Image (cartoon, rainbow, N blue to C red; front, side, top):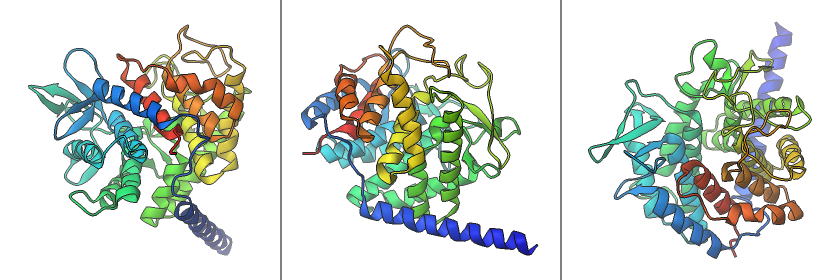
Length: 386
């Protein structure tokens, strides 16, 4: 019994020390910049186009995910829109008013009065955006980005005014922990609906946003978020180590406290590419490189470097790969190329940054919300503030 108590004490001390270090990083390093290769005038040009094509609404705004038929949107899209807007404000090309309009849309579509998670999908019905699910459910990736964007807004503008960004973020983070974190593995579930034994074990590796979890720990003064960050890094490294390519699947199962990995089957969760490097996993270079950028974490750096090494040897970057490195589609997409371009900059690869620069500055797709919005987000993260 004494042995267990001693282990608990040491573990608690380690969490407290890690939390203190994490807080010091964020107090002294507000939001470190990448190698600057994209000028603000280029970002401004793309932002105006992105606004015209995908930002919808008047006093309350959302990111439109459809180009034909009734408008639809997703909590994922709202998270991207809020991140883009607060980061674009650093370039003087977006306003707090726009951010507040996006925030109010999130507030209008929370799951309930006492649940700050956002309902994952809405559709336009008679000129109003309505939640379309009989029982509102969440998508963890959207909630994570919304919470992080609110914290960035607090750091940029403060929380004095109609919207208290810090309090809204803390409410959302609290409910993310309550409903979307698996208490056994201390990893994000794919949504609040994933509560069965099988679904609760499935994770979306692109949700392992370690930099976010460290910032959540600071603002919540809650060491359990450090455990989420550490477990997220461990899992990403374990997945990366499984193949020489370093490619990460869209989904994978993680079981028990030892974080054992089990592959999912095609079409088990979302698509035939569930076990491939697909349209979810393409965000991993961004997530891992951003954590390296803000914390200099060697584990996140290794994950990002291994992905960059694989893609640096590809003549063309296609959409979707097997984990062994075989392209599954003949076309390319900014959803795959733009996160790699950002990662090259964040990791300090000047040559690779120049090679990938056209991925960021190319004309945005006018009929593909996901690709255009990821490209826009990577642009505002990559830009030159001078």
